[in-house]
Image (cartoon, rainbow, N blue to C red; front, side):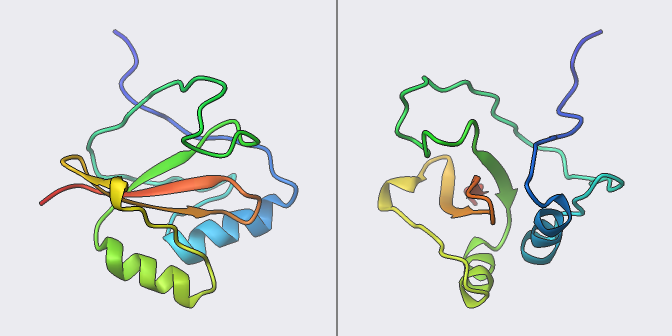
Length: 116
């Protein structure tokens, strides 16, 4: 008996419908109050950061990290849609490759492609 995984992510938004539409359009996530997202099993990191961490914007209470495949293709589609994609050499490691984007309300989203 115990926790088996994350059952949902719920957050406030100034325009929930538009924000959900952005996640559906650009990331393919079935977002919205009535949506259910069936995911592939895999690793999840659950890690509190220090309040003064510089790893992501201090004005945001959390960062969303999403496992992806085809990172370069996805990043290209996002950039073609006018969404800035941040890349840093230090974001490539034995854990995989990472890029960062922000949703329409500034929430940082880290896209993570596992190695291999």
